[in-house]
Image 1 (cartoon, rainbow, N blue to C red):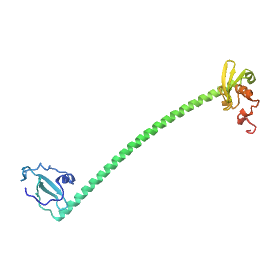
Image 2 (image 1 turned 180 degrees about the horizontal axis):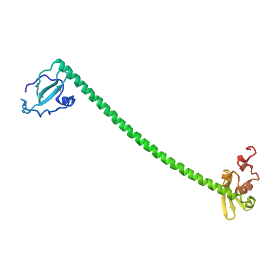
Image 3 (image 1 turned 180 degrees about the vertical axis):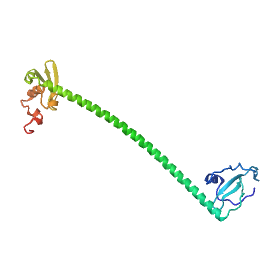
Image 4 (image 1 turned 45 degrees about the vertical axis):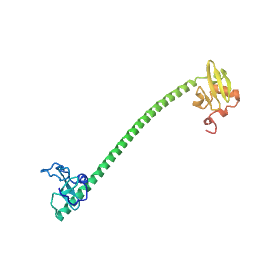
Length: 229
């Protein structure tokens, strides 16, 4: 097979950059054309899509190249070049659109996972709110029950049987019959919880206050003061 002028691109690049798919493989044509190289073999037939020779077929072996089509007119050449450029442009546009679609799918998947996470967090917070509401209702019932019991108790009688023992730093232990309570004058707290709920010291706390001083004013909540009214 005789050599000819190169079209400026390798056969492998032409196979990949062809604007139309090959209907017949490079070695599937008939009749076969054998190359005249050192190792005779069937020459591959390719299609050139160079600017000077668009759509022209040629035979190519390891050492030589030969055209098998005649030259095209300038009008056909320009038309084929325009079609080739348009096809390549559409391919690039298709690749760009495919990339945008893949990016949109990945973004949509991330957003879906974020939405699922937010929904899960909302469900957890709703359960926490429900639990807090139930706990608050329970505390309100306990408070109401506590006040009902306090109405029927004689404070002076309780004070008579409250014996305070100082543990230091305004902390006391109060023995009332067989019960024992802890009182912290600095924090205004008693383990019976009455002081904390009402703002008024109960006999357990009063016994401790009288153990330290005779003034109760500093241990009563400000909401009970004259200025508050």
